[in-house]
Image 1 (cartoon, rainbow, N blue to C red):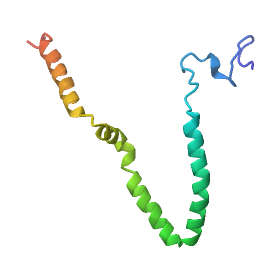
Image 2 (cartoon, helix red, strand yellow):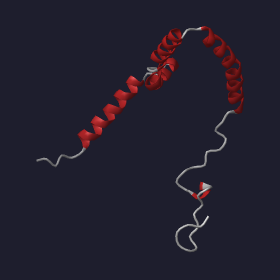
Image 3 (tube, rainbow, N blue to C red):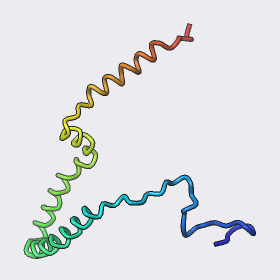
Image 4 (tube, rainbow, N blue to C red):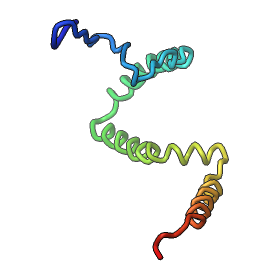
Length: 112
């Protein structure tokens, strides 16, 4: 595709010449994707049957409860992962703060 001045080629359709963005190939784990797809196909049918038997009010309440349960998990995912793995970041944070305090104390003061 030629745009702009004569002889200037811009590869708009395929950004393979862009060196700023690394190529990300092979990031999809096919076994997990297939398991997720199969599960979604089966449970979608059950969800449709269950939701057709529920009243609108019950569906709204169930969705609201689900959203209230899930919402804190989004920003808390990092802390939840650390807690489940048994990592104690408090000691790591104290070590980093000690290193910062030490490096600041060692710098010469030009305020005098």
